[in-house]
Image: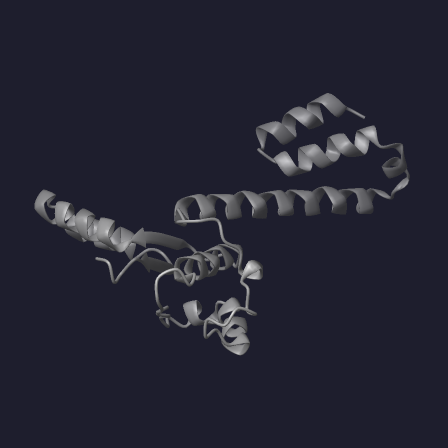
Length: 172
């Protein structure tokens, strides 16, 4: 078997997940006993997962969420007026796909921004694009863009996201 040319070809094709899995298979004698189709299936599955993880990382970086928040970490036991059924419905992200809006209101310090970022992170995991904007900064950028003649381009760029989170709306 020509191992080194195979490794070089996987690098050239940028199949990094498959390359890692192939190298692990070479190092693990137990995997040598598997049939060809089973080993190939493991390689392909590893590449698929690697690509999904890279896409998720890219979506999360582009979203620039205000804080690290996970939907699964939302505490529903604290009385903040969150209904479990509503939170479960939001978790599906169907409201984003059907172009609906969600407005999160409440007093300072109850976790509105955290909830919004958790929704954004969940949307990224569902394969949707997200843009997090602090409203005051967004208004400033829109004003600058208007003066510099790039207002329509900025609006078009903002409209590309499946979900736009506008934080601190009341302050702005």
